[in-house]
Length: 211
Image 1 (cartoon, one colour):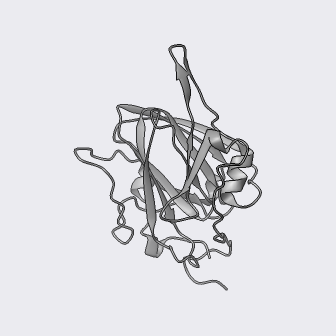
Image 2: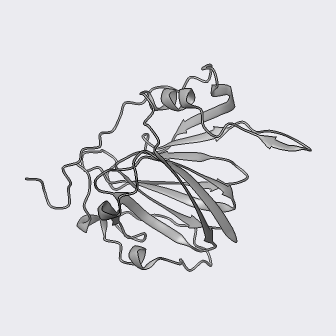
Image 3: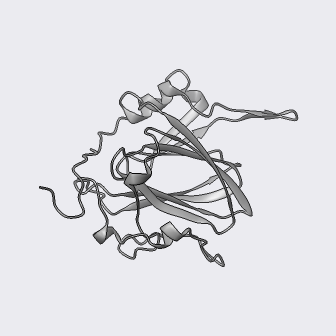
């Protein structure tokens, strides 16, 4: 038996190696652990001139060295377009949990990851980062986290690589405004636009979580 609100799926936290920028390819991609160390921000080096720009959006060697373990196998790429004020989340799959490497190619969003691993010292904590087509940042959201974002620009195109396939029967949603989590969304004058499903998100205390 397992406790109510806790799934049998186990998603462990990891040890945190130092990122070595001398690694081949690392000069083209910087990595930084956020306040929840399992969540990593990647920033590529952009080469640009009057013709345009170029950058590496993914480098497996750099990704593995930042994680301190073999890179998970990405099986699906997703691309969404959303209008200003759209808030998507907080989403996760309680089985077939997905790790996500997320980025924005047009516009700007406030991206959030919430640790929902009961055994984690950062359970219930959140981290947030501005992702935009200008800063080119990417966030690694590991399995065991709920994820969401708020669109700050007129429109935004949001891309992510996922480590498992979409499984709608296992989709779950936590309320974006759960006071127990206390995400400081940069709403200003924005009234969040939610899907029907997201408007019915559960409080963390009532949600199914990982061990």
